[in-house]
Image (tube, rainbow over all chains, first blue to last red; front, side, top):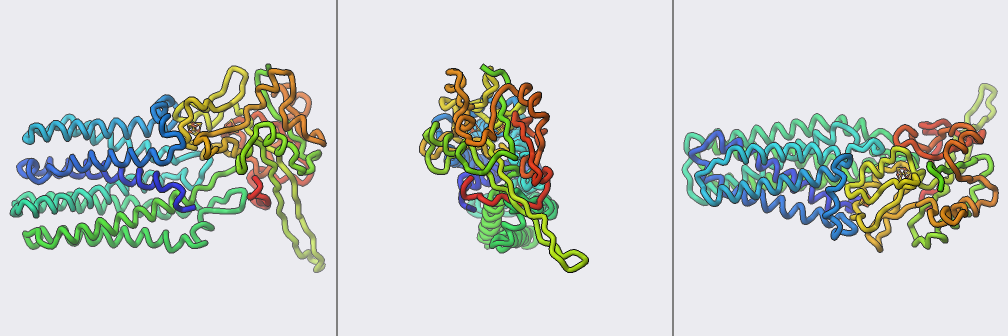
Length: 291
Length: 206
Ligand code: SF4
Ligand code: SF4
């Protein structure tokens, strides 16, 4: 049952990661325009790639992918239609931004970057609304939205921070004045994202208490084998973020990048695993009211 | 044709024989696991010791035969991204296979389990009120097959005038979510909507 929605698990996590990477790396760029051109040139191609792959994965959920062109016909009332429009627009905006900055690396393209960031934020909102269905009480909670924005920031910041670390290391960039500020941006975003997710946990548990007409509740699903997964995903995300925050903060303390990149990669692995398990549990707790 | 087609279900008359369910499968040539009409067995209650040490019980069981209710505010139509799920000028909600992308979003939302996924076709299918039969002046297959006449169909207002307003019993969802064209006459065992005293007993079957 937990693996029924694998394509949606991959799609939602990848899109949210890409959006988070964009948000955090654009803020970091702004704070450090002199480093931006060299140390951030990998971010946008990576964001475009991740978004493109996620869109391809989303097709795996469809019974007749050939008809995907029709999925934007009901944007007037369908949140799913709006999600496809929003994700598609986000993709187009990041590809454009990537193209502009590759063509002329000195360009800031601030206007386009702002549009892409706003589209990213709207996409996460719309994605959450897709699941906030009146007939599915476990999902119809603000914790769905907190969880999605939390994932966006945690995974986006750690993925973006890790990439930044690798690029700086490879290019042998000495830490300049701005590096601590950039590293700090990634840490703050990741910790803030973790905070959003944490606020959602008690709300999740309350929402899971509702039972359907088979007498099954989200709590039942968790206690019959899912508790380990639920706790596991929380622990992995916390440990991963802590490792990231500690590792990256060492950049500031030591003034060097060595050994930090591998640690960031480990923290990314831990948090990604936590998020995947958490998302599987999320889809696994789908319980509809009625017959 | 009827303008606001509705089903009437008489809980007192239904024996749970499932002839309606089978007649529907037969008419629509449905594969295993795809059901346009389902007969749900809902049962529950408990034994309690009274002050004299004797046992009393409030055990109950009853059936509900439900298909798509061609709702007035159908959540399936609102949610469908492709507009494949639509309500036509005759008030019938059906799926346009030329547009359906098989995302199953209508299935996630409908609290009556009406949209059914046909994995072979990669699309959704559901009750279309036997539109072809109606055009020929015949009743829907389920209504025609019911041996106890527990099912009726007709214009919503006519059925309400004849049987009174629908009674909402467990485990039917809050009707204000979709405004279903379903009129139910409850029997004496019926539990109020929202009650958690009972559970569906035949989940494998429906
Ligand atoms: S019963 Fe379900 S599928 Fe039928 S119209 Fe109502 S919401 Fe749509
Ligand atoms: S499965 Fe088909 S009918 Fe149902 S919501 Fe998706 S596109 Fe619409």
